[in-house]
Image 1 (spheres, rainbow, N blue to C red):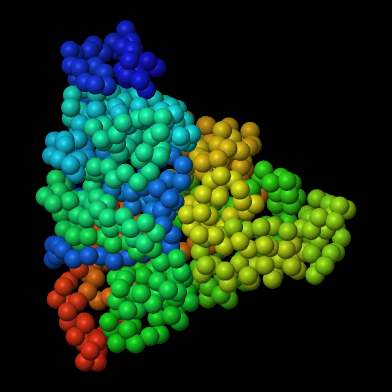
Image 2 (cartoon, rainbow, N blue to C red):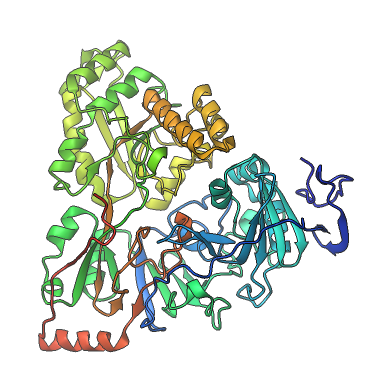
Length: 616
């Protein structure tokens, strides 16, 4: 379909659409503006319940940590998809998000929207109050520039190049505060709301050059959200500051949120060292999802005297596909029988019942908790050393070598290297390694720094990876399974799946308009992935558990059903839901607590177990 703006914005097509939209005489640096269709039905949402606490107080510094220093501050291009990317991406707001309680569309940069009759286009009215952190207004030109940028070779990012050329077909400006984004295919309204309300880039602050990747590696750009990077100490920390007089302060769904004046993220590469910082009061909160941390590590005076509190909060979030990702381009793992053998050689159930104390549940397929999109008929393959050996024998590994590890006729040992980035998982993987020997499989465990390890995975240098992708409201498959993303660096197809059947299903899934049929295709995709045996599902956790010093406060119901984390200071919009920014710092309680530590005074120490949103 011809568009009103191309990647370069140089041509003006004579016919815009079959409905013969006429052009007005309105010029911007990115192209002409078009005439808005007259029959649009504009929607908004100013009536859904608020979930932040009116008692929240502004100010203070929220102190948290990350286990590796980011390789870049860019959101795009090489090395931009590490753990720190969550902070950088959520510094910029999307046009719309989703209310984490009702599931309704929620205004962000746009305060109104409308669906086009073509089942491809969403129209948006930008909130005229919206500003970049340098004071410049947010306008439709920012989205036109974003399309140009995402399609440009200068950003050196094949994934975004492809996505913004195939999935985003067009962006049209009608005036400074009105635009339309058009999908590459017809989609249901739910799909359009999921894929089109993208975040913009600041057109006034970015210049695309052949050296863009290097020039912008550490450049701090204007943002639309409440926090901007203020200080970068290489290898040590990154600090965000809250924007003074932020444009969104009085908007309905932003009220009483994003309360700390600063967010300091220290680099603490070892969780045990980070734990000591936490117990000293140098960090404000700490994740306690891992069973030994919740049950054992918290047996300290700081917890027992009530200086630090614990919350076990049941949520209703989609479950990430946590497990072992097998690189099918690897000469060993290219063999289906080897992959099937690996599936039966990993004693994940023993890991769950012993080390993880039964707190986690076995994951059966590629993620869960996405309703009809999850193939609930699939069951994870059980630990069966005898069956594993049969598969390995089919692949030629039928001779016992040193320590009982199988070998083939060439003397090659059956060894699988596992790359992982969380030191606390070493004990889990060690158990799997010892159990795998019963099937004649040797596991070689390679712990890497988080940034370096993830880079290795994206560059396809791993043999297998123990990790999880974040989940969304509905499964995304193209970036992970489509063959166009296989056998090339800096894509998310870390299993290097190059399979015609799953590629065809993924293309049908992306194009399917009917939601029920789309869900059926999702189940078929998961079935085909099961047949390929390239993903070993590990576990799921239908809750979050965290600890925090008693001066870090949350609402009475501490989070929303879609909250992945309790103490996430930004919006959480990467998940599709705007659940974050609910915490605040009570300086009076902080002074009271520090005085109590000196005097020995105690406070109630029972953990909070919140089942408000627990599912049966």
